[in-house]
Structure formats: C-alpha cells, structure tokens
Image (cartoon, rainbow, N blue to C red; front, side, top):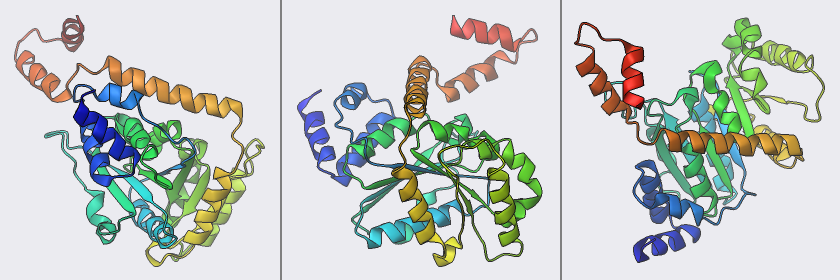
Length: 303
C-alpha cells in the first residue's frame, strides 16, 4: 500500500465518512491494491449486520427509514447498504434508495450507500460482503443491508447478515404456503408491514402458527406487526432484533456463515476477469454467424 492508501485506511478506522466512501469506491471498482486494504482492515465482528429482505412492495425501504429514525434518536451510528436492481442494458442502478431516505442525508451519524446488483442473482451484489466489512471497520453501531425485492431467490442474504428480517404484507396471505418453501427458511424475524390493512392480524396469526409447526429450535421466530410509515411496531421490531443479537449462535451456524462468506469471496475472485458488459458485446458479435452455438462460445471464451 502507498502512503495515500495508508492514510485513507487510518481515517476509515477513525470513522471518517469521506474515507469510507472512497474505500467503497476502490472495492466496488476493483482498483489495484484494494485486496491488500481489505486484508489490513480492523474489523469489529461484534457490530451486528441486519438484513432486510422480502418481496416487492412490502415496504422495506420505509421500514429501513423507520429503523434509522429510531436508532439515530438514540445517537447510534447507522450504516445502510441499499442494493438496487441493475438495468440489463446499461448495468447501472435503476432505483436509488438513497432518494427515499433523503431525510437522513444531513444526519452526521447515518451513512447510506446504494449498490447495483450488477447482474448478481439473489438480490445481493458481489461486493456487498466486502463493503459490509468496511463499515464494520468504521465504527458503526448498526449496519443494515436492504436487498432488492426478488422474492424467494433472496436466500443469499442469510450468508452475510447476522439477523435476517423478512418483510411481508397482509396481501401475501393467499401465498403463505409458497412463502414457506422460500423466505420461511432464512428468516430470524418476520415483519407483517402495513398492518393497518384489512386481514393483517389474521395473516400474522396464521404465519405465527405455521412457524411453530416447524421442527423445534432454540430460536422461536417472532412475527412483528408494523406500520413503518407511522413508526408503529418499530420499537417492538428493534427489541426482537436486539434479542436475536444476544442469542448465542451455535458453532454450526457460525461455521455456515463463514463458509458462505468465503464461498462468495472465492467465487468473485474466480469471476474477476469476466466483465458482463464485455461478454454481452462479444456474444452480439458472435451470434451473427450462422453456426453460432452458445455452448461452443462459452467453451472458447473460458479457454
């Protein structure tokens, strides 16, 4: 590392937001030397990472807003990674959750960064893990990762969050059996948001019953009803998050978490030389040939 990068790392450890933003850009863009920076991070593993996931329209961003409000009122330092879906045409971010969290822009204890998925499945950017660790090295009290709403394929979040919160709405009541086969398997906490809507109490009750039909475990998954836009139920959700944070994670789940993170990092290193946009251009050129075969193309590309 050069002197500039050493100074940058020092400022990051001191909690400087500008240094954190710069380090995130280095990591996100695979700037030469960023791997060494990651290896020198002083990561505070005690800082909880809360994953917020769930289907589209559940009010995840509104709920994140509410959590930021509650925690910032307690003068806690909160970091947010808001993962936006990527345009398949220009590989840029489509949404921009920071716009929806604009009220927190001037809060000196809140740092919000949007990431594009850049073609990653599962609602999680390939760089999310590294950026989460940058935040863990920068003195935050709470870190939130909000994933894109792609439904049951969002299971990747369980490999990087200490506590996974799955957000649903009362209208999901007709799909409760479908939920069981997907998001049900990754949740530490369920939230029924927009609980002022008709059928919310019944849906929450049915979800609670369904959860307790599962094999018994030490952690009993709570179902919290919220109206995030009104901050209703948010203190109860925070209490559930705190309770899970204090829950003694057994060795098997800790090993799973670390193995999942290692797999993600190895996968990224193996795929490092493959640029999706460049790949698209090469396919565009190759497919004009009459004898184009995708499998032959891939074999040649990987050779």
